[in-house]
Every structure is written in C-alpha cells, then in structure tokens.
Length: 378
Image (cartoon, rainbow, N blue to C red; front, side, top):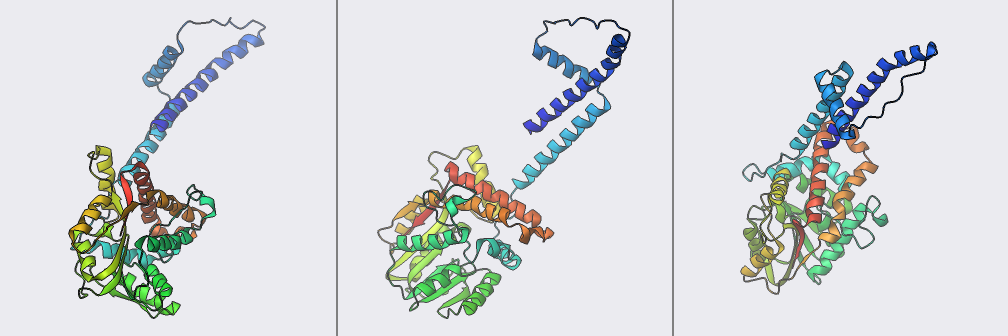
C-alpha cells in the first residue's frame, strides 16, 4: 500500500514537472530564435524538501487532468489491493461439526482432483533433509518423494515392529494405508475417513494397485465402531487438526489399541501458551482455524499430557519436526507454478486455488515464526 501511494505521488510530480517544462520550452525557444541569451540561472536557497512540499501543494491546489488520472489510478489500485488482502485474510471455511464441514471440504478436494494431481496419494507434508530446504528447487527433492520419506521416518519414529492389524486414522485417499499394506503384506490395514469421496477413491485405488489387505471405511474417529484391543498399530497422520475433541481423539485410539501395541501421531500444533499469544499471533491462529476448517490446535506438550492421562499409553515420546517439514508449504506452491495447466484450464477453481495458495503461505510463516509446531508423538 505504501509503495502504491509513493508511486502515485511520484507519478503526479513527474507529470507536473513535464507540464511545467512544456509551458516554459516555447518561451526559451523564442529567446534563442531572436539571438538573445536565456535568463541567467538563479540558484535558490530553498531546501529540497520545502521545494517538494511546495510542488505537492501546488498540485493539490490546482491539479491538472493527467495528475488527477494518475492519482485516481493509484488510489483505485491501492483500494483493490487492500480489499483483496482483507478478503484473503477472512476465513471462508469455518469448522462446523454438525454440517460435517471437514468431510464436505475433503469431498470437494477429492472430486476436483487438483489436490491429488499435485500432492499425489498422500495428503500430508513431506520430509526434507539439510540441503533440501531452500526453494524453488529444494536441492532436487521431488515433492511426492518427500511424502514417502516422511512415512518412512514416521514409521522409524513409531518403533513399530511387524504389526498384524493396522489402523490408519484419517486416511485421506488411502496412500499411507496402501503403502503400509505393501510394506507389511502379512498385515491387515484399515483406513478410516469421514469423507465418502475419499473412501470411494481409496477403495478404487487399492483395487487398481492390487492391494487386497487394505480396506477403507466411513468411521468417525471420535466414535469408532471397533472393539477394544483390536489393533496392534494405530497410525494418525495430520488428522488431529480437524478433531473438535483432542482428548476423545487420543482416548479412542488408546481404546482400540492392543496391550503392548504402538500408536504414532503426527499433527500440526500451536506452541504452548506461555508466554501468551500476541494479538498478531492470535489473529494468525484464528485465520488458520477458519480457513481450512480446523476447530483449534493444541501444543505438543498438551498432546503428551493427554496421552499420559489415558493410563494406557506409557513412555510417551515427542518431537517437533517443523524444520524438516516447513519446506513442503512453499514447495507445494512451486509445483503449481511449474505446472499450472490443470488449474489454468478450469476457471471455476481459480479463486479457490488462490485462497489455498495464500493459506499455504500463512502456514509457512506461522511455522517459521514459531507460533506453529509440527508435533510427533508416540
């Protein structure tokens, strides 16, 4: 906005100077034509800032049409930019459990196909080593491969051995479920989601890939239909963000976990509220809650406390993988820059894509600035 205002003032001064020269040039030419010397140059002691102020005052008091047009154009552009920023910073997909806003949004993303085209079968962030964290090329790191690397790292973090019965809580279109089913062919893998479109797409892809030991069901993670002690490995990657009751979310996973089993959680977290969030941080969090239908976030430490309170989960370990995953936010934008055609040929998706790209940048800054953390718990 300041740049635009400076541009308008500078443009106005330039136009005024040009007009002044245009008015004086004929008189100077007449003087030279008659052989007379031009009037001597008079050096004035008026300070430069005072001269600029006087010029600006003169412009305001007697503006010409070109000046008015320039100022009007700059003001209009400034107003449009301010309006656009305000609209983009106003959350448009606020969480509503009764309306199943999470399932509805994932239904839309799945049916549109744009998210799958760019993010592949894994709707979660990727893992980046040192030397792979700077855009736009990320050390040659492939955006999709980063997601597979994340799964392998998360699996190592979980310390799970050879599970026989796996539950993927918030499975998306089933990419991780199928990956685990192939990695542990003797295991039965169940992925759950509240999006009918995701469940259908996941089932279809499992059939296409010939992976019979992966199945997908419509199940609410806060009210799972499974009996106690059903699974020996529970996997939850980036689903906790959408849960309106984090305590119930963890309790349900602990309930269906067999004694001696392993649970691993990866989720976006906000930092502990000590010190209290600044007004700017609170504004950022409120935006992130409402733009991608999140009820709220909690801290890594709070997740650990909830896990310990179950009385079932012991020796809880946590970590913050913000540094390893931050590059994914902007990397996901760059893959769209390098290959814009899937969006470019579908104008109805332009505005939504712009909003999502804006939110990706806000996420990047929130994680970089420390208000957000990437929680790993097991």
